[in-house]
Image (cartoon, rainbow, N blue to C red):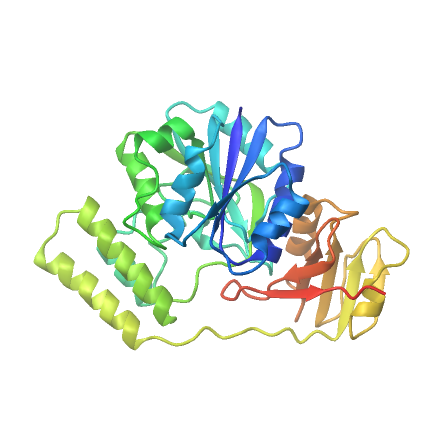
Length: 368
């Protein structure tokens, strides 16, 4: 088998459904499998997977043991030459895996391959490619200067070697993953992707970023002003430094300062609400249930190159590819007050996010 896609899920049932539908389209023609590990979600994620995706291998973890343990559990059952670690709140393009596998097969001494990530507004997520977070680099990020934290030396659409990738999307050979010990289970959440990337580098492999393919990651990095994120981030960095860097008094003081400063700078992330005044539904159908579901009139169109301010554009994945939807989002993102949602293929809800700092919005369609 060529590819095993590991998706660790916790309590994001609708995002998971959208993710799986995009992944199913992306593995057509590939010798691939999908493995979902559910970390004891209190929602109906498992029931949904069983009902809608009978070919997906579902592992129902009886406890929430965190990101590392959950993914390692999935890898144990993976049969593919390659692994793709994928977040459930992502959407992949139809050719994402084909592009990256073709690229990976041409490399020698391959480590991890990452790709371009954007959020639900079409904004590039800089955590797609990162540098090694040495203590001074992490401290600068806390103080509002993330330039050296992110791998800005490479263009977002470029291709080249980059040290660190985000756990939302990582593609690598299974034998490399196992050789370096997989995700370190000392991390519960945050830091395990940095640790794995760095372990692969230390083992002598080359990590590559390939910006020729884009995926959506709805839940981007939380703001450092969020207390929970900041504590977890710097707690993870503390584990990372103890494992990989020689400790000294100045070093430990910087880590201590970062954790304490994160606490005092804490605040809740602002919820970004759409100010939509109208809807445009990009579809090839003549009529649709959306027309009677939403509170404002819906214009059904087959193409869109211009929108009025504060328009919400809804994309019909039954009639448009996910790749074309990504391109439309990129082309339209600059319009004032614009927001985006997607109607997944063969689904009864629309879903989207107006900010990478918030999980997003789900709206169920009312059936007549």
